[in-house]
Image (cartoon, rainbow, N blue to C red; front, top):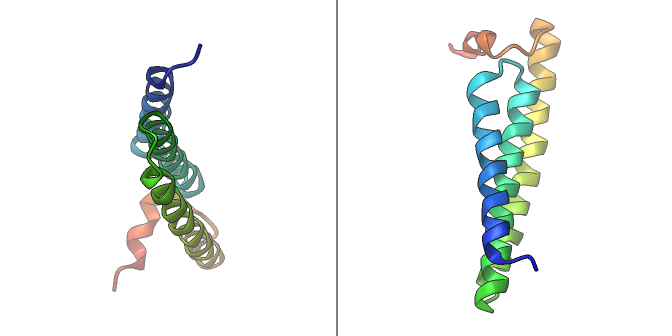
Length: 100
């Protein structure tokens, strides 16, 4: 039987993988996917605890997190496309060129 402990361990593993990916990668798209992985790990935690406690608050938070993540995806990808068109690279080291 799968308990809430199993969901929490899976969520911790996913969040850790996302954190490691954000800290070690240089490609902006990979970093972006790792941030999304971290958001999904938090969503999994909210859903598991919401189901375990019999409360709907966690599921409402997940709805809002998914809405913000969708907006983040749209804006983030638009910025990456614009940066790629100007510099023909999406290396994170070159993002400081966007400063004034």
